[in-house]
Length: 580
Image 1 (cartoon, rainbow, N blue to C red):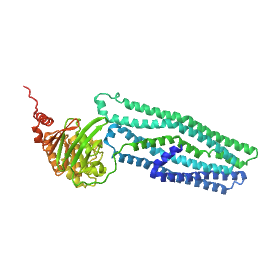
Image 2 (cartoon, rainbow, N blue to C red):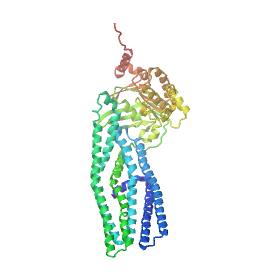
Image 3 (tube, helix red, strand yellow):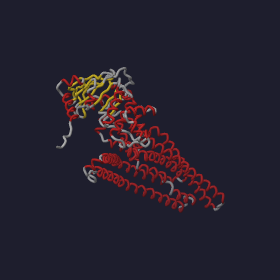
Image 4 (tube, rainbow, N blue to C red):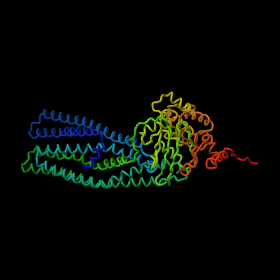
């Protein structure tokens, strides 16, 4: 139990002060609760004495009123402190996980199910948010208040005090056994919660595939298995807790009966006055209330601590070295020196050595799987090279901070991702402090101002997650506007015009030429008109550079590039033969 409490306490971080305040307020709540006992005892003494005057009634009423008001106020502020602690404990962890994701190698997302991370930041941390502060406050406050109550009972009558003490000891023994038993099954339940979230997300993302293959009702086996798994573990927890909960209830009620019986026996034997005997009977209904509150917290203590342990597993996510210096290079030439890189055991790039001079355009071509995108991604440190080095401006990119490195680079991907936000804010990802006029100028250069102005709220139109309310070409142009706004000295294009319609391609090509003037450009391209004007063309095959040069040089040689050009020319001249 102590270990589980320690886990919650350490996880609380800056929110410890709110938990402390909540515990203190909970103590005063118990003090006001004891006012009821005092009021009742005052009335009992008056009834036994036979006075029965209105002064006693008014005094008891005043004490009860103070108890009700005091408990109400203390409970109000206690709940506020608990809610604040729970919300920010979970919120701070979510932010920490989000920050960590920014420096995680992209290979991690290939090897691990994003549903697991999603499950942690949603279901698992929701459990922490709602249970951890409440458990900690209930247990700590319950124990403190129980100790105070026991001391009060001992002062009142030491014999009744010992009965209460034995009852609490037996209750805690049962609770401790329940908590130890829960260590085995609760972590499994938390993992099943995360797996369920992962399965549901996968089902939603793959719904188009399920429908296209007519697997509705059949292609959801993983979700059904995850639901069944989660149901089983939740039922197992209930089955585990139920016998112990019954034993706890029986123990407390049995000792309440013992207190009443003892009071009657002591009174009959003349060892206790009538007022004290009646008060002992009344106390038997109240004395175990605080420890019962602590026990209910202990019943879910393992759930809360297990949720925190599960969330803390994200601390072990591999991160790229976050060291380095803030570097602003004087030039932006890029040097690959004997670079090799593998995904798991599959080598993608092999001993790549090439120089990309500052303020030149380099086109990278090659068949699918040749390593083009990987080569560009290594420049941006989406992964770290395993052998060799990559330098920008003569400095190894690992010597840069990730922030200062990314300040030098803009990337335009073929598969564009837009956020569920306004058009303007999506473009502003390139420069968060940009003005509206700057956003509009970038949009006009990227040939997307015209279609934006036709949207219901123009630049304030909120687009769906992933940009699913826009066409592929529209998303592509917004991503190019984003890169234009950032205006970084190095620009990487991954088939930037692949989804742009022919009507806008020429205009966009001119805009891109303006964007790329006096910059270091690396472009992955398959269109001849894009490639032929490059200062340098790199032809990749099976992870190696097999040809290098400009268009005129390479076209005169037999090889992959000349085959590429011939294939493109044949494709451009291909027409359907009219029926005779």
